[in-house]
Length: 596
Ligand code: CA
Figure 1 (spheres, helix red, strand yellow):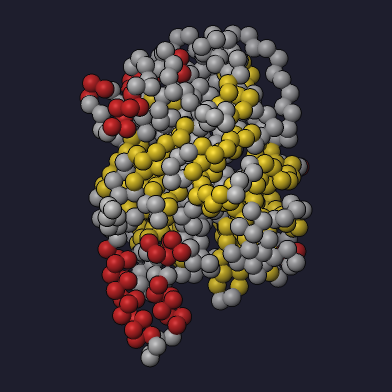
Figure 2 (cartoon, helix red, strand yellow; figure 1 turned 90 degrees about the horizontal axis):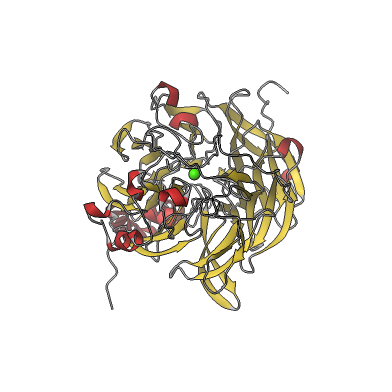
């Protein structure tokens, strides 16, 4: 039997020595809490690999709270019996305005770490909201020479490991900040300068490395994911998501295989496949999961004349955490033509499906189908429509796991523009879904969208410009009447992933009509941002139990506990209202900003 490669995680090795030593003393002199604290990494310079894997219940140490990305906390002090007693504990105005708030805060050792627009990073006392430090990398707007960004100067959050806080910056840098002081420890430019790359996603930790992707496929880039040593910032590995020019040689067998599914000179624009948001880590399998983005240009007939699946666009990739080598892939949208990324949040679940215990990965990518895939082998288990309006494909073929495309879907090949659902914003975008192991439900923010897709006939690649090869930004021939959407604009959908069916839904209404991310808790609650509201639902029935206004453009809630008190935090508030971090607690009596 092959020996499992050692994880490069010096500190956790050191720590396990310390723990072994302490354990031998513990019976005599060490209070058990202190030993537990050391195991969780709290007394020795912040959370290490073990703490991340065990996901300390009182804390929120990574983007999805755990490395399975469930956005679930077992905390239950706030529950369906008392949630109507929620009140404001504190709020803090984020001194940096921009497009939108998309951050999910982290909490470690009583400190909250989060981000605002323009890669602004801050640390607050999680009990009081008082600022501990803040760091502004000073990245200019696009019109002042800053990086090209398709979709705003946003940032979704941070990673923590030992005594470091990691942030991916809009200009492609990855930075390690000291957890206590916010001072810069190391910086890596992760993307080729002068090209149209950007970073908006949260880094993740896997096997002692910090993992970061990037965006830019609307402009034209070649996607890749890079792992850096958390201590030194030295590159550990880089894995491309699409092949480069074959004349330059392939970086791996995976790239050689992928190149057989492309035609023409795709490398000129770059091909796309940017991994701009989702990752997950299975420490037991030692696999890092990466969701890849759309094709660049969008239109396959320009990108890859002659067709092809164009691996590994719009795919879930399982990579060996030690060297980044591709172990398996599953392509959710073969031959992407529609900006149907598979960068939407994924989670790792252990489910009983048809009487069998399965280790699965689930994802609701932009294309409107909810996928359940074996996370060890990549085997397709199920794929069902989760949105009302899905017109590009009629379903997923159970035998092949491939979408059954409708005749009008290939607007480029047909030389005929078409209204299709979903549109490029997807039936689900960056907003996290969450899981509750007690209800067995996934809480998914769904949107019904459509767009007119038409291929341009005079495509020319221009650096610094959108290069989608479509008329999405105007032009083209006369359009037919826009068909009506059949479903609500946005909704919260509770889905049983074992049967891949919707159990209940709550359409969003009024001021809460937009979707934010969701978080679920052991209190049988689902918290979600929606429009300008934080809304709390009963996790079993979907009933709205409590809501409060927090300002337009809500991000994703999270929760933590300090001194026996459970808090719930969420960022919300537009540039006009002032972006703000809001924190609620039972019987909270803090005055709302503006004084009401
Ligand atoms: Ca895109």
